[in-house]
Amino acid sequence: MKIIFMVQGEGRGHLTQAISLGQMLREAGHQVAAALVGTSPGRQIPAFFDEQINAPVYHFHAPNIIYHAGGSGMNVQKTISTHLAGLPRHLKSLRCIHKTIRDIRPDLIVSFYETYGGLYNILYRSRIPMVCIAHQYLLLHPRFVFPEKSGFDRFLINLNSRSTSWLATRRLALSFREIPSRPDLRIMVVPPLLRKEVQELKPVQGDFLLVYMTHHSLSRQIMDWHQANPDQELHCFWDNPDAPEVFQTNEKLTFHRINSEKYLRLLASCKALVTTAGFESVCEAMYLGKPVMMVPVPNHFEQECNALDGVISGAGITSRHFDLSLILEYLPRHTDHSARFKEWYRRGTAMFLHEITAGAQSAESEQEIRSAAG
Image 1 (cartoon, rainbow, N blue to C red):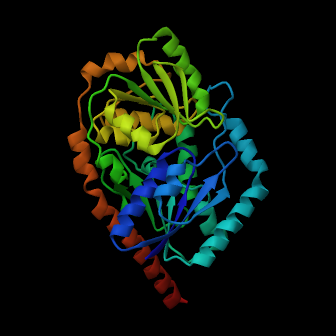
Image 2: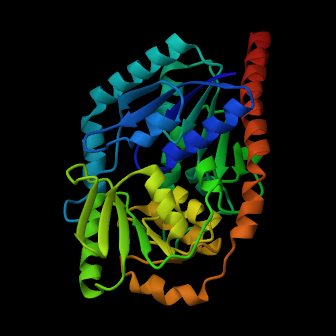
Image 3: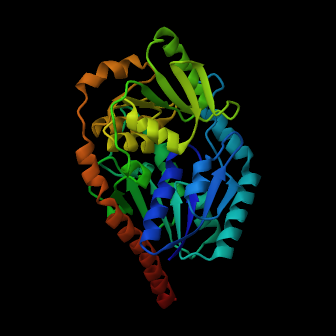
């Protein structure tokens, strides 16, 4: 099959998932003909994606989360108002997506939680089948455990997940652990997608903490903690476009621009990971047997759900702040679940290839039925 990827460019997780699936599909004889990636002002797509996706990359303007300048997390009101005001630009992006897809003529579109995925299907009534992949689709599963008293937030995030997957033939819900699929809801539960580079790492026990944050505004909390705890070595990754490749405030505190190879090397040798609660980073740590402290971005309900699900799955602990003392206190109590996680993960290749093929075939069958009925 000739396949096009549509990838949400915010954060690192959807990008690395696309790289991993691309590796898997090519080994099975399929072609990834292009990757369409959503970008926005202040969002820099890491260089590792262009280097490792092994396909032409096309950028288009896409909605993104807007954060408070002071590092207090997601600005929900400004995020919504900005995106509503940008409707003409969004329609232009959809036209660009349609032109690229029309020129390439793929057999299948795989969308990694790209906001425009469902809208594209609705507006252009594309006959090309679409399979959608994300951890967020697991939140549509009746057995998913949500934070308490979160009914309205749950409604909003699931509304968004449904909108990204309108008319898709399959929703592949990435999960830390095995949960029965729900074909009646088009939800197929599958293992995480990890790049080969993660599997090839040999973890060792270092003496530093590794910190990964989805937005550089959160770095203020790290600096404040380190000022009170100057003896603990920290290596931090951020997306600050104004910072140099390596910014070292002192010999014990170093900030790095996002670099895939360097990040994985440090992940394999740290004693624990402290991260905003993105799904992909937690999965990589679980695979390598590294304890995790998950710090959801403030006002970011999806990350609150990820953190709770990660705790249930044995990844580590959660906190509302970057108080790194908590992970240091937790380390002696941590149980390594990497063997169980790897067993679930190793089933992934066969499951993904089956579901993607089935997703394309089911769309063809539906079209044949509609043609016969007409």
